[in-house]
Amino acid sequence: AQTVTQSQPEMSVQEAETVTLSCTYDTSENNYYLFWYKQPPSRQMILVIRQEAYKQQNATENRFSVNFQKAAKSFSLKISDSQLGDTAMYFCAFMNHTGANSKLTFGKGITLSVRP
Amino acid sequence: DTEVTQTPKHLVMGMTNKKSLKCEQHMGHRAMYWYKQKAKKPPELMFVYSYEKLSINESVPSRFSPECPNSSLLNLHLHALQPEDSALYLCASSQVPLTGNGYTFGSGTRLTVV
Picture 1 (cartoon, each protein chain N blue to C red):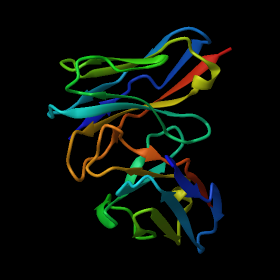
Picture 2 (cartoon, each protein chain N blue to C red; picture 1 turned 60 degrees about the horizontal axis):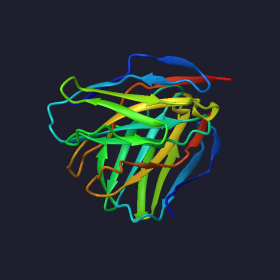
Picture 3 (cartoon, each protein chain N blue to C red; picture 1 turned 180 degrees about the vertical axis):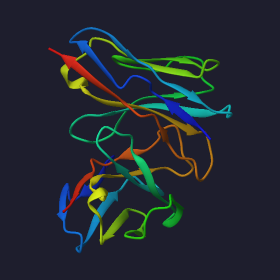
């Protein structure tokens, strides 16, 4: 079974600064996907960024980038130029690459607060 | 249309009531999911439907009854709930088989059982 660990329950960052959210996972699979989801107070889970395990290049989406270390089973999210709208709960998630019954496994989440 | 729409957004029900939550998507996704989420916790999977058939039931109490009438619609029927069932109920959908796009989530129904 896969596990996803987010060991930091809360973080705070000053607006315009950079923050890194940590995530580690455990799996015996070789092909899989990793995701970061954002859940603001509006409640909707929004996909922030995804990474395919077989791609060595780290994914980037505008101000969001990941540091994917496959051997270390680490998948951290870096948010650059933090904005007030980044205040939310962030979940790291793992998914098998294939399989009819593949499902997302979530970490416990981290609450990020961006200070003005 | 790239959305999952959930109704109602808020629901208050008594322990003897019967109510239903509705979820709809028009992205052609053939898998749909119900999750339960408590405050400051990750979503917990309840049910998975694949091609309108129930494929996963995560040992959910029978007071929760899912239904998938067609490929676009997913319902969750509620009956005789307990106060501890108060939570945010999230619906999601995905392609089958799953792809790197992951799931698309709705904005949830906030359920309060009194």
